[in-house]
Image (cartoon, rainbow, N blue to C red):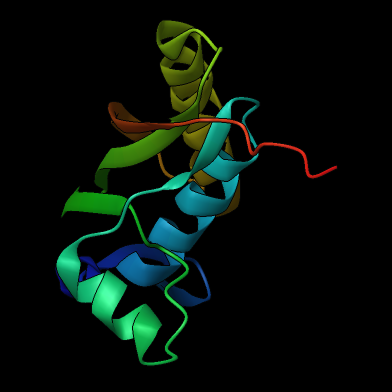
Length: 126
């Protein structure tokens, strides 16, 4: 999550608000994992090692680009076998964009979805 250290800042009449990139990544990750057909998010090597060492990474599988008040989000999704990957990607784009915009009050320029894996259903034990 080293790439999520930027802040989104907004000046209000009574002061200013600064939202960490890690918070925005966590919002995006939670929204993406709520989409039907998404098994999880695929993190990078750094987040996978941190998770093995016991550090929970809420924004795992999300990469942000913050430029001024413009937010661009990349989601690295693992899909469930049997679902349309195009439909999953479309639903992730909509859900992530809506969640981030409603919680931060800032527009999301784009949500890019990378389907980087497919998981098979677990075999039932008899």
